[in-house]
Length: 213
Image (cartoon, rainbow, N blue to C red; front, side, top):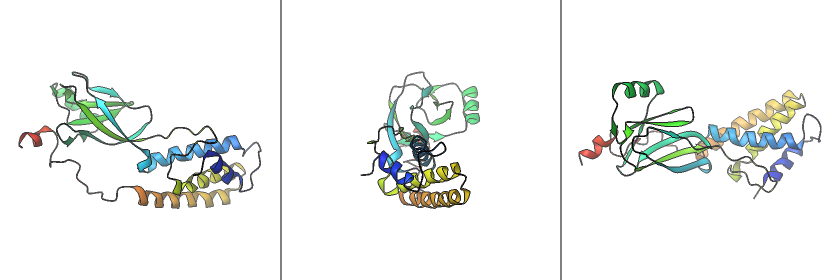
């Protein structure tokens, strides 16, 4: 299994010395930058986190996890439905026109907060699936979160930054092209391919579906 130092060494083996523009410290930063950007662009399973959101009666706003990058879905397991995502403007309109306490059916995100509508009237947990920002690699023995089969993405991204630092823009462009191509292959490999998958379990939003059972 490749570790942080293995990836560093692979980058430096492209002929870089410990100079002012390209050095091991900067390579470490570029590797971390690459992994975090990949997590934001591809919904890889290694970046997925499931967390329970404990509802509080009368509380509509909840802080997002510290490592939150973007949400995948939010569900209400007790009633078997997914909450519908809405724009913040639509959320504001709903809140201003219909103040009520009930089981949430809609949500939006704003300023690192999860905002629910209607305001919860119970303390049941919601299940949130989200893509996390991977932790910063620090120790040489740290293992990248990225799938080991795609660690070359970290190398090609870092080489692009390194060659830019050396003013070799032709080589930098080559590695950027390679990075984009490999990123596309990675996304095609690991992301869920069925884009028409149901977004609710019972054909509609909220409790209305459950009520008719």
